Image (tube, rainbow, N blue to C red; front, side):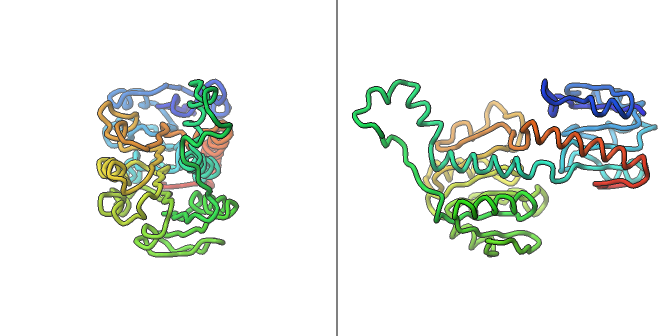
Length: 316
């Protein structure tokens, strides 16, 4: 079979590569195709594997042999599912590959917000500790997680993993989810109550019609003054100007985000000017072990589809 990768550089580097796919057939690997290049490059593909490339009626129109689309991702909002159904193209995603990685990054952001590790590191490397009058200069605030209340929005696999870590830190954990789910150590509460009671609010829900712009001026206004807001889900759940305003006014104390509405970041992204805002470039999912696991799922999905028992089937 011929397998075409349209945006390989979003997954691969010197440590993780496409070699496992080469055992299945001929692989044509493109770093990052432009939208107007996709249709021609996948025209003779049997299999297309993508991360964020948009596959719709325009980009799929020449792919007459295509029978399978594989995703280097759990989300599939970049795939025109209706078109694929109409043209007998199966679509399989990669579920739950990044659960531990995203939960870990969530706490990396949370610990930075509470311990100010990077700020203290800069303080030391700027030579300021050498000139300190005391061995422990209290330059930036430090707070314990133990006893704080964590509100988790979305109790899927990632939200549940975050709850388990929070319990180990002896945090009080609140949760709300579109589908009520019993999780050990989590008190289920309505969304507004979660906002009102939480010292930290962390988002782990998918981006859909219900969650689009969920965190806005009204939402931030309901949060506990000085609370920390963390988003490792999707940028579209947040109205960025409203987050900026909430930080500027002091309505919330700190924010830590790994995703924004437009990625890569635009030059005029308002959050670049926000105070007390920690940002990482959508890398919560990207540890080496996580990407190796992802590759294993993608390869197995293709094998299983051609063996007649598809796995992680979104459409087909």
